[in-house]
Length: 256
Figure 1 (cartoon, rainbow, N blue to C red):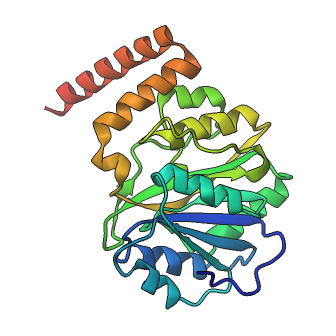
Figure 2: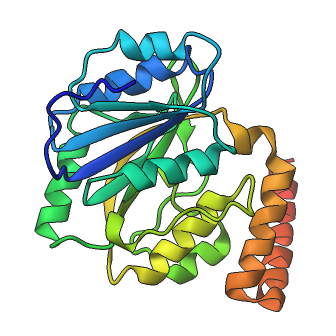
């Protein structure tokens, strides 16, 4: 199924949304993208052969920049790889079903930053957490640093994946050896290839506080630990986690 009719030959952004039985959460994402004042994008939906009304929602949504693929895949990161393979934009942005841009001008602000900074490897911003009704729950627990470097990711996913806008030509496929934290490992590899990163102080993404990683937190944390050991060394990673433990312990004591 393909609902794209007159997409630009080379959009600035490829916005990729992976779906499976997302009839309830997808509409807010579709609407958020369609309301953007910047139209230099394509919106690629990679659906895993949903059995609910997801495809009906998509077929009833009018956006000439929308492109829908539906078929069986081998999980969320395999679906993301399919989206990457189809992406024609200079930059890629991943928005899960239920996530949305913070305002209608967000994409324009990112585009302005890209032009002003002469196409950096990564543009990133802050993230708010919202519930299923779109109500703000607060900022993400990890705030994006003012100046992002590869070393920063030794402390974990310091920038939300959805607020991590990557230059398409420096991206490789997601590593399917990881079931829950391939996005973290992917961001590290992107940063290895990025000559420059540019941070935006504003909130650019509203992140739905539900998802695969949230539901499988223990498995995700174990995968992230293994990834940290691989890229940053086992001993430094162990020492860093010891510091994390004592920092959390002291915080808990103070809050009693």
